[in-house]
Length: 214
Ligand code: HEM
Picture 1 (tube, rainbow, N blue to C red):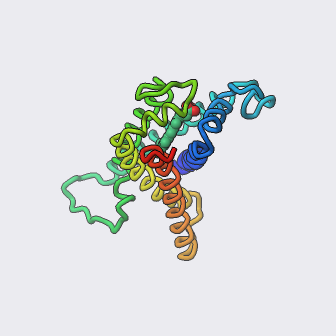
Picture 2: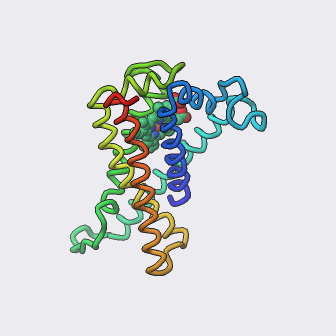
Picture 3: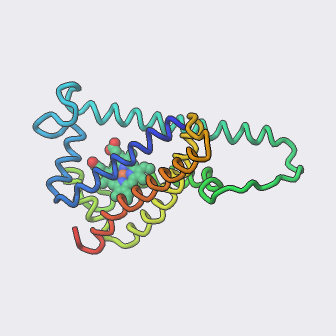
């Protein structure tokens, strides 16, 4: 869970950075999107180390594998916890937990549903909510010109960053980084920073589209 979670957090930070390219203009954003897919004249990202167009598929393979292993680990943990808890009639004491920690399971399920919607909108049926895949900025603008789409993303991103905040903390704890109260507060601070950066960094672009800045 820890390793696949951190791979996905790294992806989110890169994805957020890439989305901000829309502030540099539609050409910059479209060029970046095509470059990632190896569809630019220079052969795209990592060309000629990799043949043009290979990177995106290797990247997608790693991401899909991470999602599958992450969900599989979560399901195994849930089953193991249930087996340990045994008799349901024994009184269970609720431990002091943050809101994020308590919502990891359902939060994760809702994020998975959001991801399916998101991939339909931009990757599986590109342009299903307006715009076209040849000029990816048109899909973004057509989508986020609608207030309900921005509202949907604003809510989904709250769940994403809550999941990331607790997940970041948990991952480094699993990997042995939480060894003292000082380490715990550094980890907690870093987890909050990553969560806030992701929320602001992801939402600023849709809001700029909605309010006509882009
Ligand atoms: C406000 C938040 C977000 C915005 C505006 C956004 C925007 C986009 C856009 C425009 C694309 C298509 C890029 C292209 O065609 O080149 C895309 C693809 C994608 N996004 Fe997002 N995204 C957001 C949040 C997320 C989140 C939270 C996740 C993961 C949980 C995510 C995962 C993906 C994935 C996996 C792809 C497909 C990449 C590929 O084609 O291989 N996105 N996103």
